[in-house]
Length: 228
Image 1 (cartoon, rainbow, N blue to C red):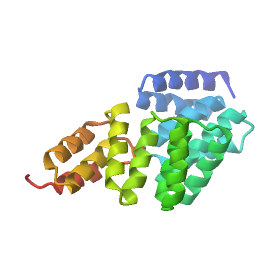
Image 2 (spheres, one colour; image 1 turned 45 degrees about the horizontal axis):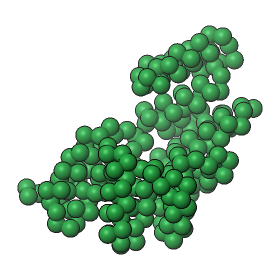
Image 3 (cartoon, rainbow, N blue to C red; image 1 turned 60 degrees about the horizontal axis):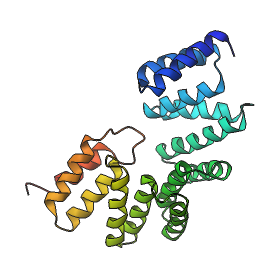
């Protein structure tokens, strides 16, 4: 590590917490080349994730996990590594990495991420059991509520799914996956006006490479409404 590397890392972190991701990445990259601290490596990897550079992010988090960084930083790196695997389409690896991070530092955030990966794995009984456990941990977290909505939707229980999506919307009105799922259910129920309203709201949300729903998926769902 070097003083100059940590200076760039700190400037990157300040840009990062202010939401200026492009400027943050520029400084993180300079700090990485010059030798910045591991906590700044975490920010750099997250910035690469948000920019859609999954291979680059994987390299950063793998480097942290192979280092002598403090356990808290390594745990965060393991969590973020799970996100990388998800975006690379490696769902089993994503699940296993997130499971390890969850066991070390359970939180609403790790409950939400692991609960989502359990849904993607397709074992709905396991996904339901885990997400109910997550709900007992935090019954107001919008990601956990959204996860339960998705489980029930996949199980064919549209009424329960809708109830959870509406609860999730109450907690966070601009969660893109919730609005997308509400739009999809309303379309399937023939409530076209409501479906269009929710899907258009979803398009107005901030959608990043880390979002569970893409802009293209929302637009495709909207197109199914036709001119109604």
